[in-house]
Image (cartoon, rainbow, N blue to C red; front, side):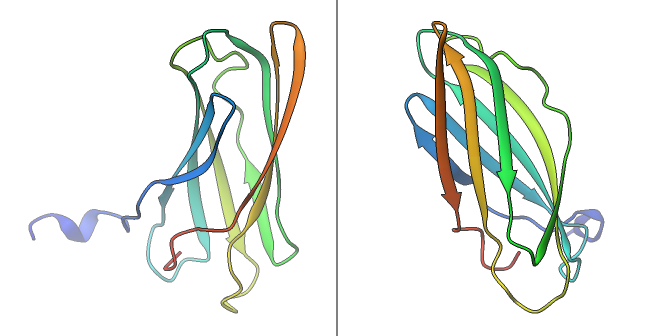
Amino acid sequence: EFGSEFEGMSYPTLTAYDGGGVKVLFDFEKTDANSLTTVIMATFKNSLPDPLNDFLCKVAVPRHLDLVIGPASTETLRSRGGTMTQTMNLTRKRSDGKPLKMRLLIEYKRGGRAVRETADVTDFPADL
């Protein structure tokens, strides 16, 4: 196929979290199949009728992974469709085939009330 040699690997979008009106989608990019680093573009979506303020996502990974998180595009998800994006670089310390996994801690304020949600993300595409 013309031009395909210049494109990175392609992976399906993963719904990492979906609850309480908040959805987290992960899109993945790798420069080549053998790279130990996966770039994750996280998109946070608010479907609630209220804006979500002081929005923050903390991420924990097991010891066999290194994680570098870029700055969030915003701290406020406006009501009914507001989004925030954040890039994460996830690197395996060794190519030992251990699975990718992470835990998300999502914090925000809705109507002045603090909300905390956690999610374990384990269903990454198999060939990452």
